[in-house]
Length: 130
Image (cartoon, rainbow, N blue to C red; front, side, top):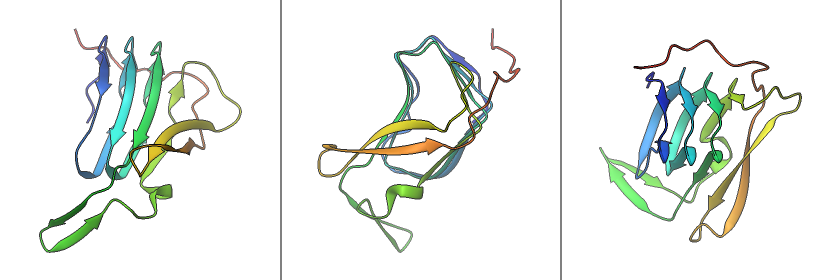
């Protein structure tokens, strides 16, 4: 997904069951929630500008089992590595990794953090959509 976005309640909200996707090179700004990824597995969220959102990013996993093309997917699995956040700009230059708060089963009551280990020091030059 490489569409610069602006002024939304949810700028990007992949939800349901989503695997193997990349969200990269977006201006995500002026929104209530920048990105909220629900039940997203093996995602890469890289090189985006998060500027002026109330909540820049979050994620959640809820209990479910699903059979797709003969494979069994279970949301109760090792969620520590399902979303790779890397090289995003988070409102200001950062020296340390940026924590991203998420929710785990059951019912999202367990709080969990993922990290953008290499946050960008300055915003990317991404053209705006008119």
